Length: 264
Image 1 (cartoon, one colour):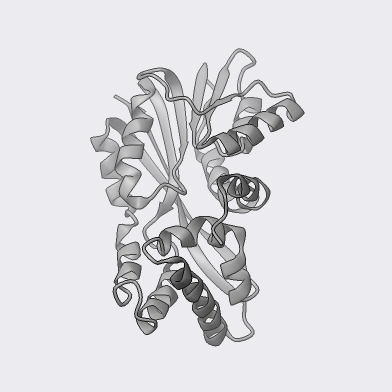
Image 2: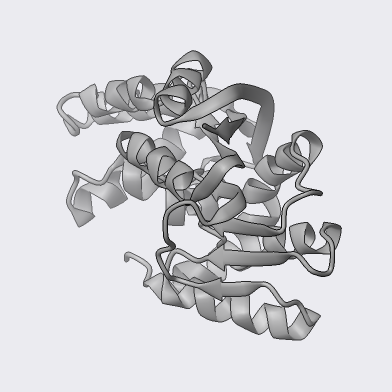
């Protein structure tokens, strides 16, 4: 059964942000300094955790705005802001051009085919000379999963005999292409930082049932299949993982990538 937007918001706050998102935001924190920014916009702020961390590092006079993806995430973020007494301003508003000294954007769940438009919109709201930061998985991510998913789709005669899994691999942008996209969208002095992040699961059943995979990753990977076919893929994928790895844990790697640049 597909989860509701409200259920996904709670799962993201409780399980996905502390593990998945944190891997990326720690890389951002190591490589991005926002000390001089008077106002910061955080696009795809989720339930706000990284916004709060950024706010604590800035001058009291600075303003931080969090643009949440939907109303359910917004509700959680606002409740958390009250609980921690933070003045981060959360909304789902679209902001005007050239408005912010710094923009940070979470593209970890943005579909690969939408990355160009997402980067363009992120650059749009930054002031001239403003700092833009985007973080996302790049090419080479999920390779261990995609190879098994291809085998399942092929064996079960689904997803155009595994072609969809091949497309998933090709969709993820390389660091070089991400740098080019950023420059084409108006950024200069573009820099990229990438680190390998490993996600580990006890077995196949734990992998396919995990909030990250079941709620956020797998739905995109098998979006063209009907409900019964999706369940079939989940079962077969879990079985194949266990058959391949035996008593070993199952791991997959993500190339966590942070892009930074100045708007020209």
